[in-house]
Picture 1 (cartoon, rainbow, N blue to C red):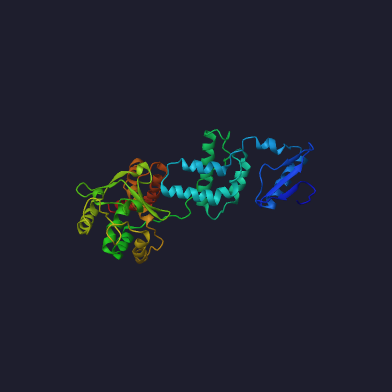
Picture 2 (cartoon, rainbow, N blue to C red; picture 1 turned 45 degrees about the vertical axis):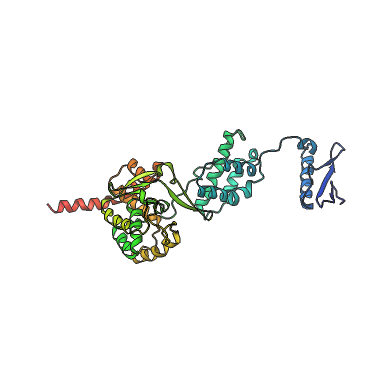
Length: 367
């Protein structure tokens, strides 16, 4: 047993440590549990001595009879388990909790999380990663919002204005029609219909790579988007589209129909369930890395080494907005459940105003 100015620490046969001390009531009090290390026992004694000196001491035995405060580290996993989330979203939330939120708030009782502690935590997040920072704050705010509904805490301590939103760091430059033509010419023939559908029908990568024969109605010129494929934690998962609005019918621009018909007719695998754009084995989903091996050289040939595959969807959305499509029409075509994203494409289309003005001048000059 170690001799100390306050309290005693004893190593037990179990190799764990017991801490105890004589309290202001002249009674010997044991810690409510034993400790893994001597340092943990020391820390407990220091805390008890501080409570005595600050005149807020309560005998440990009385504290152990009280229900223990629920911590964020206990509540958050239960919150996550009760959510019906897409696989990639679930994995993303798990990573945010493990790497961004719980290192600070794991053992903190929900009721002890204050607006000040949230502000301090948020200010210490990596400012060079604004999107990750916003997602972490948004997740913490949502979890604590549910805790309010569950009556675990009286109010949500997350009050930082606009902390869960980010400005687009990278401004997307849509591909021009000439650039699209050059990219298509540089791609192997079997990838050209995929490029065109991703652009002119503004399909997500997971949507276009899950398209099957049964989803393509060439007679009526419609793509039926009913599923999407994602890679989550090393697994390939086929499920519903990203949101409820993602389940939609997309009209195919007529100029693509001949190209699609040739592609469908040349497919080696028949049957309604055959993938439209499979991997080389003809049956499994194409991997992003396989596509990038041909797409990256093609975009360089077009002078657009900055163009990402997802930017093709952005290009198609801007082209649709340039036709004068309403906000509701854009939302329907793109599969957006809220107008905010579709508004971005309408704003981008407004950049054509100078071109329209110049064309009007040519009309006037021709008189």
